[in-house]
Length: 319
Length: 319
Image (cartoon, rainbow over all chains, first blue to last red; front, side, top):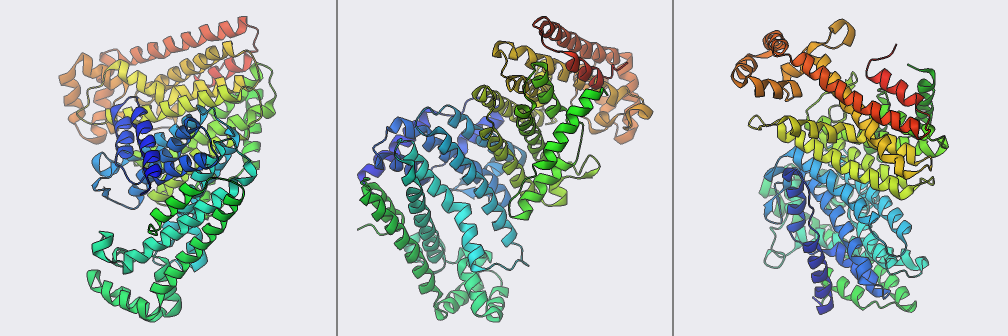
């Protein structure tokens, strides 16, 4: 990881440490601080800070916005973990497991309220544009999550484009908005903002496809994760959707096999169908689109070095 | 009910009908429109409109704020019904029963996001003051609900003041804020706003105490509700807290009796302890405080007729 990216990460972590949520009752505020303490790569606040830096903004304006985005992301984690019945997050019990489900609902709600309080205290440039972007994206994330749940219904017929649209709403638009909001916090020309947005969105899509590739075809010794988690869960991923499109019968037969036994046969079948290459090509296409945006931003005179570094780090293209 | 109050209610219902939530997927947006269609007295939007009228404001400024408050209230109903495992609301299935729990969490979340979108489109007076009040109260409602859940733990020791504070946060502050936000939307002197807030807060506390009185001591033929619902549930109400304070042993013995059998003995015991009078006196004290506010508002020259009418209607003092 690039030294400056590490510095920006640290500056957010310092800000986070200085701004714990304070209030009572304890059972409402402890889970809010707990989920924010669990760590992770802090990609979203990083994108905000990088967007601000690329346009030579004041980092003091970007820090509250980076916090807003990270708090929103954590709100969505708390509620998604209830819906997905996930017990563990980053090696620790999820909020509804450590406390209980009502507490997880409410502390998530209060995190969402707090994002708007953070915005209301933001005094930097482009306040209204930032709020409007945030509200639009917050709704899109809800829509994406609902589509994800709709698609997990065993009777759902999911097309490739509906799936990619769901992934875009559920994860990529928030990355786009984070970079754009950071850029806006620098007070720069708002006409360039959507190119920042699109860069991070395409990068996010590429990241997600690479993540799905690695889940099924990755080397456990490198990814650190058990191969085939998505296959085991029977998750509707791009790979499964394509497989159902190309050979519905065989796909169904293979997925009817229970548990661990299905992983290797599905992986082999998908390689026969060329889906391992297909998903890498898709990831590559999104990456190419992000490069077109990056090129445009460079032509406009923005400092794109950190954007480049972040992309290389996230997409595993670091030299 | 007073004719003008009916007219204001109708004007909100017209506005609500003209502003359905539109979007996809259906499973996210249908529950949002469903919960808002279930009816009720619409007290909160009414308070906003009355606050605006009392200061001779433009009703077009108050309508979006009345909608914001009603949407927030409905967000809290959807999530509270999950937490309280309530199956029925206003005679209809609750959202998590009609759809499912994840859908109820998400459509509630999206309702909460929408309240801020409504605010962002509000162009009337005192935008920032209204937002700040709303955010403060939204957090207080979360805090109140968490306290309510903490208090429902069988081992919880709940004092009278902690209980009244919980009720205040969970229900009365939103009534206060509704009236205050409506008043602010009229563009009047913000120094008078807190007296509007306090009036509706005290009225709300009085209403809640009368509601608790009627639940245990009311005449079924008049209330339309089965007597003793709170006793059956074993709910920590002011009555039960006082009863535990005055005679912990006998209270526990009576509440150890199961189901319907406990209702009449508890009611009789509470009458012996004078709690039926005690809670009426408490309701009366809150009512008296609201009258002091009303008197002050009248002295400042506001039109308090509708506030008076609303209070009489809600507190059952209509002539």
